[in-house]
Image 1 (cartoon, rainbow, N blue to C red):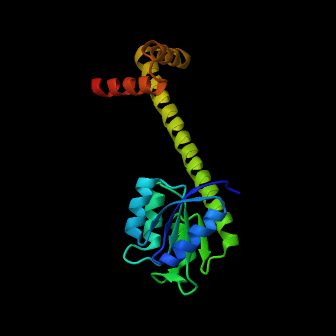
Image 2 (tube, rainbow, N blue to C red):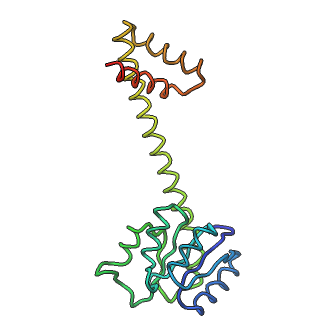
Length: 199
């Protein structure tokens, strides 16, 4: 269970916001902001950087799904989306699946039960962290693979132009990397660029 989180509540109904504030205070969380529409909610999320945004699905003008989509695209904060029993679809589709596609980390139905709120916040935070971490690992792996490709191309150029073995070509790239204090893949990129210019 998450010990303490800074929360932003976005709901058009001030009574619901007040109730949620009370429930979260009892759970030891801080409500650092409240908004009554999606546009304000998004602006507050950008400025306050909450740990979690609790978002009503059926907001006027800028819907909860629109806000959730933007929050996920900008990796601002995890979203717990909640909807009334009558709000089962959005634009003719299933709301829960649309919420998932929009990057919502937890989904609750109204009336909200206090017993569900704490676990929903914890799940949203852990899922968000896990996904962002996974994205970082995938990006790092992609960069590593790209660096290997560059080094491979640079070695091939040196082997052909200077009649070097693969080991000698790599040693030359490595020596330049140490001498200039630059990563190996940057040296490789420079060799490739120089080769392209000279041809």
